[in-house]
Every structure is written in structure tokens, then in C-alpha cells.
Amino acid sequence: MKPDFKAMPLAELRDYVKERRNDDEATYELFVNRRDPNAKKYPAPLDEAGIKTMEEAFRRKIQGKPEL
Image (spheres, rainbow, N blue to C red):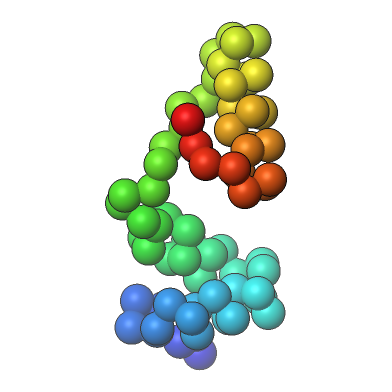
């Protein structure tokens, strides 16, 4: 019997998903239902310029530099 993912605390749900990566229901709860509504969104790049912009944003994030 699966646990109630909606009632599970976030930290516990993260640990559950780390141990059971193939559990689609738990993964969906973690990454879709509990996503941060204030998270910065990056639209899918439709052209080469968009791809370069996204790559630069990822590089800056990885290097710990502030966003533009």
C-alpha cells in the first residue's frame, strides 16, 4: 500500500522519491503539484538566440552569479 503523498511532509516526500525514482505518482506530486509558484520560469527556446540565453542563465546559476 502506497503512502498518502499529499499528506506527506516535503522533506519526507523528497527522500521517498530519491529512494523510489520509478514511482511516477510520488514524482508527479513532488515536481508538479508542489512546485514553487514563484519560481522563475524559462520558456522553451524556439530559436538559436533563445538557446544561447538559456545556456547563459544555466552557466550563471551553476557559477553562483546573480541573475540579470
